[in-house]
Image 1 (cartoon, rainbow, N blue to C red):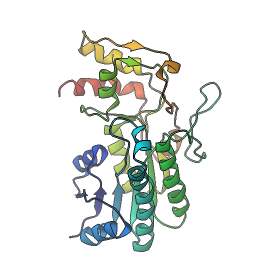
Image 2: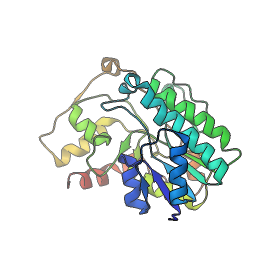
Image 3: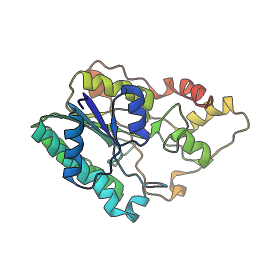
Image 4: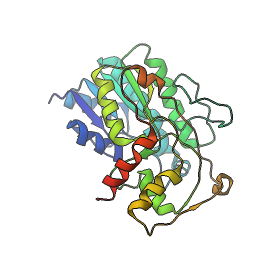
Length: 273
């Protein structure tokens, strides 16, 4: 069975990509290199999109509690896929994360793709850094596209959607953060694949979102909703807060929206579900 594109992983991002691209998805449990090879032989794709990842059942802190699962999904599997791509002359698209950097809001510019990841505080972030480091090196010799997303915002309610999370949290921080608006991410990924883009790309909106901005739009359509802003120090969790650069993606000709431009559209569609 031949298919141009094969998606690996039927989770949140994988399912959204299936909706957008209409291509087959493999949800087979991958435990070794041979498991991936069997799926490649079965589907014979020209492009592999890796959407497999472990972010923890509740949050990224859970990755520490199941280190084997985290390393398998976030580190070993992407590296195996890189070797598969190299040996079989297949394009690999790896959906990665931008949560791999420290950031200083006082002096630092938005983080470009070429900057070396340095956020080793969280085990989750380390597992992503390990894989990105290997795939970045391998991309010099074979067709690999690494897409870094961050804090997904979507028009559909889902536990991974930042809007759903914030509505449930009620107590939030007020720090600008890069956001991936999923409808635009889907268009950007198709655009990059069609142009056979290689290397690493940040796929986020321009600028940073302060969470009260999003919830204030939500309040317009849900007047009874209330939330509380708390200082970052009161969160008492190790988390990345940062702004990623979109210049590299923009240079390809893809139009990147400002995060403030998508909030109204997103919330209007979200409340219909």
